[in-house]
Length: 260
Image (cartoon, rainbow, N blue to C red; front, side):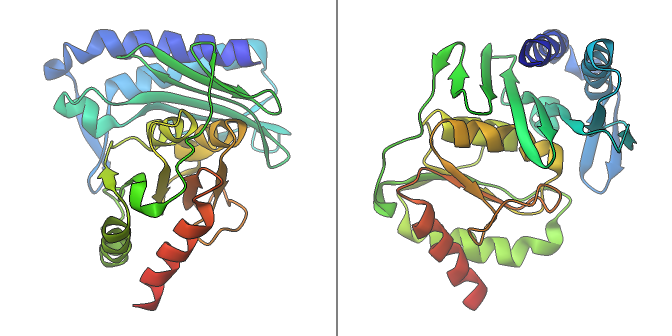
């Protein structure tokens, strides 16, 4: 299954990389307020779905652009984001990825996040570790908040949460070393797994944004939960991912914002 996911991600990534230099001619439309989709998203998703269905026709699929579930009652469900970071893609900012995960019975089986511009493929299988281009990944060893790099964001379609987001950001930026805003939840989670950033949190995401990164972080020795430190609810879309040394500290920081 992991081989199928990697192949699907790379094929979709090849399409995205070719289209990136010709994006001025792309058709873009708004799915909802400030939530954009391009024909590249749709074509890339088609490549991935066809690849999965060719090998696993009975599996379920939850994909961003398809507008519904396929085989919703199937035991194994695939979560697909064909182009996580569409706004970056549209603006020519080279930071986006293909994200694919398979879950069974509410638990992740495998994960692939592929960056077609840097040609980096992050992959994980439950119980077998996390890897970047076949090199094993480990989360960072940072122990103190004052030394921590963290990433976050606010989905463009979640402007109703901006005041709470700003409170959380204010507290974290005052206590941590630095903040990074990538614009791709999948890559932010992959970067936590790779030890490039120490923590990432965001609220109100979609299941396909985090289904792959969640497993990558865990398999790299990190911790991924909701913002209160409880078990992740994939459909709710709130996630906090850190190394084990910093997790409790970030839970406390984010809780402070709720008390303001």
